Length: 200
Image (cartoon, rainbow, N blue to C red):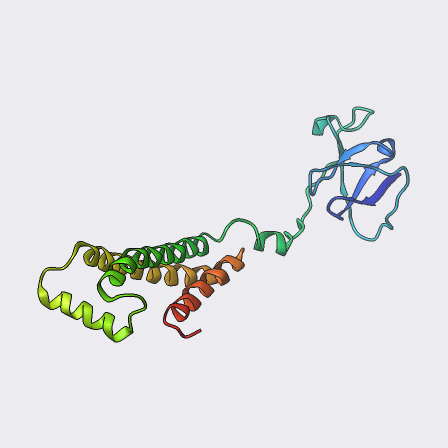
């Protein structure tokens, strides 16, 4: 008489010969080693897959050296949906986050570079119109200081980082797994410009 029970690892119904009761067997579904009960804990309602003892080849699973009765399930269990949804990384979201952080870094470098020069030329806390007039004067003079050229290059590079960050964040929204990175990147890309422009 066979012993039927649910695998404690995967929950699938399996069956073993009586001689294997109370011993370690291998589940045919999850391939985990489980301890078999000595009596059946499952009512025989549907066909059950036979488990084989651990550490023995398939052809020698029966202690009486008869061929093993190991069958493959017709319908393998469906994968757990949550496990596959969060599996792996959301690479576009991570790239979007890196691009948005590089954009913030280029903006901070631009502020560090221009702050002392503007203070030297215009004094403490100049008005926006004074800064605009100063840059217009530098542009019309034809001789741009090196710090203005570097600041302009940082502005262009920062804008490219921002555009790439937006693109990769949008792509990251469509990919499964680790969407919190996408949300964080999107918040940076939306809220930081508002903060810089004085909207918040």
